Length: 106
Image (cartoon, rainbow, N blue to C red; front, side):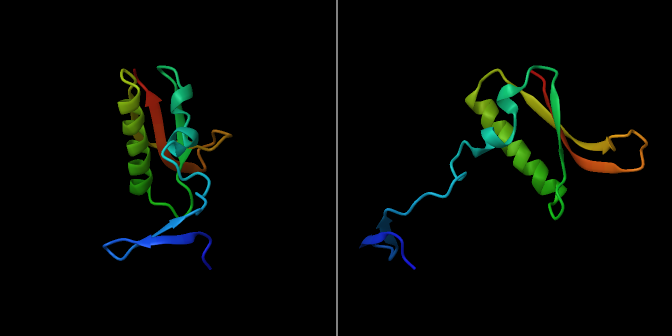
């Protein structure tokens, strides 16, 4: 099913169409809304648990890319991240949640 109307076919054979709605959350600022980097003060940190079905290395790479993009946009702000094992809420140590912790360091 076509939503937009075909405008033209490029020299590469790719169709250019008008009026195709952009899905929500697909703009470049989505990382700023996904992580609280803009709300953090020096010395603060947050923990992101590894979600079921996700890969820790992939998760760390996504976070690292978001940090680097933010740091380039806002000069003088720096973050670091580390693999983190979070104890369960009752601090009994029975359940450990694996994830990434991010600190604002500058």
